[in-house]
Length: 266
Image 1 (cartoon, rainbow, N blue to C red):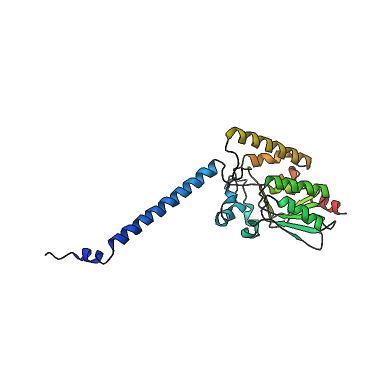
Image 2: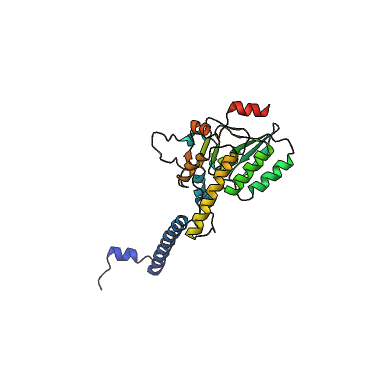
């Protein structure tokens, strides 16, 4: 009987059946990963899922998306000035009041944030005078509702140095009777998009988008902000942000200036 080769003797040490089973498992795992990625991309493209609803490891990038037209002459990246930890911004909105009447709002605007804001304002009575904002945005409806309450109560709004106000957050910020933002605060805009479970009918989605755009334009006008501001949001995809320059903040009347803020507090 001919002696087996060294290679065959070496392979003979292993259970061939077990090796085949592990190979099949590896192929199945690979197929599942590829399928999951394909489904995720398909769902996002059809508006069934929004990047903001993916797990924290992916969602942390949502807080500071890239600058639109990154690399162009007019696209200075203000993300370098944002000093807040992204994980802190990625949490649901939290509220903290200090002894000087400044109510700090930090984190994502979720459905229900407006109701919590109402409760916090009531709890502090007439002590609130300024709402300090640091948020990557979130629920459009809650942002506008919070902005309306801010205006109704006569509060000022402020985005401090190193803070972020993006996506729907500038709508909340616009509610302030006086609005100030630090030189190193980042204010960014992008397109709104449907939350999971929204209608996938193209005609209904288009109608809803147009109606929402009209409501935002009327809201900004009501708050004394040039509604042309929102044009930057409309032509910026959700995966990026259009960061407003200092000049644009003033020209669109989103920021009212230090003198106006001082006058409002007198």
